[in-house]
Image (cartoon, rainbow, N blue to C red):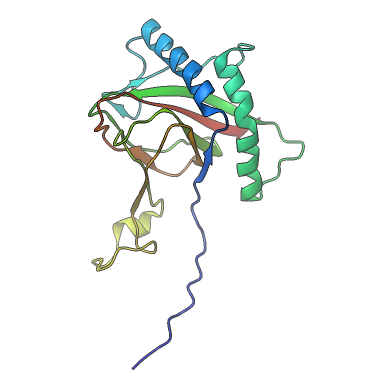
Amino acid sequence: MNIKTPEILKFFAEPIFKYKFENFKNFNKELCEYIYSLKKEDEKGVEKSNRGGWHSKDFELTLKDSIQNRFALELQKYILSTFQNFGWKTENKNIRIQSMWAIINKKNDFNVLHSHPNCFLSAAYYVKAEKNCGRFQVENPNIAKKNFYPEIANKNELNMILAGNEIEEGDLLIFPGYLPHKVSKNESNEDRIVISFNVDIK
């Protein structure tokens, strides 16, 4: 018995918006210097999802004309674009970066699966990212789909549990804060430097 290929209606997508940050080379040079200076001042950092890597305290974003302040201001157009793509209301809304921090992963460092509660959006911006420095990976947030399914014969986007993306310097990923994500092991010999931030409405 032959049947026609069905129309597949794909509802409830989980998007990740990928931008290439304009003028990233100039920004990254200053951001690198700032992040390494933070590490020099506070070698211990904080421990969150990082395993072996260094995690900074939150940036001081209100320090006028600082690299982190200028970077945060430049991010606004990408955040606004993401809100508009979601179809969320932006008029008369105080959309803000709630917090921002950096992570340096050396060889063999990684980040375990986690999410960012109490925010609408989370993001990862790549300041330094050599080849094989660690894929950005997301896990399907549908608990039922993760825990109960038949044996998979052919992997496709309908049965995917874990998905990943190769990243490069200047890439900016913005995604829902509830989306579970992790970073695979840095297999390069160079530092992997990422800036993460959360977005909410005040």
